[in-house]
Image 1 (cartoon, rainbow, N blue to C red):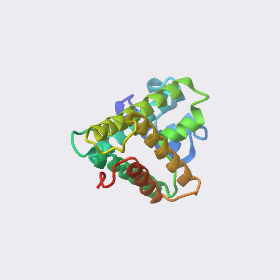
Image 2 (image 1 turned 90 degrees about the horizontal axis):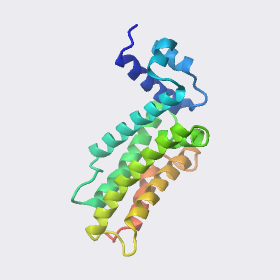
Image 3 (image 1 turned 90 degrees about the vertical axis):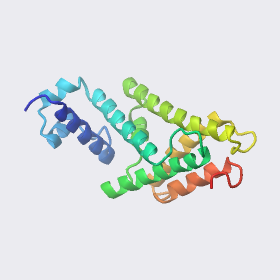
Image 4 (image 1 turned 180 degrees about the horizontal axis):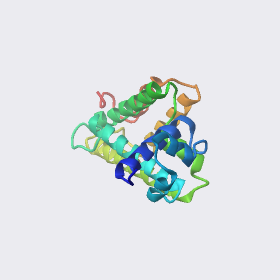
Length: 205
């Protein structure tokens, strides 16, 4: 088998699926190779370590998230920033519903799961995850600043702080759903309420 980019992609896709289903620590390199038919030697041609693989998995999930947000209209734009914030909430809910359908259970957020497992154990992965969270937070902050400029935020609301609050709420609602404290349907519903609580009445309609 050649050391092709296709082999690398299959390794990353398989690892993304296995890590979501069972967690990083429970899945070894041998299992990822067995799931793809890629020899162990080829794995180490592409990745010097399992940490490098998980960083590639993080990148894959991040690209999928940005594409999903763009498709939902939840990206930076000069108009209707409040509606775009609500579109982010819808996109988060749809992603989690898709995971539940695919895996037959709530598997959580790929970034949050890996952060819980590895942030204190692997500095490379921690830094990689931190950069993704920072990117997501900045994307939210852009929308929040536009909402402020458009006069749709309540007086006294700090757009940058609101972006961090929303990111934390996304992660918190997903975690609660995963532990059985809420359902997938409640994730976007609750997020919409949180967003509306920071907007002037009717601004998100």
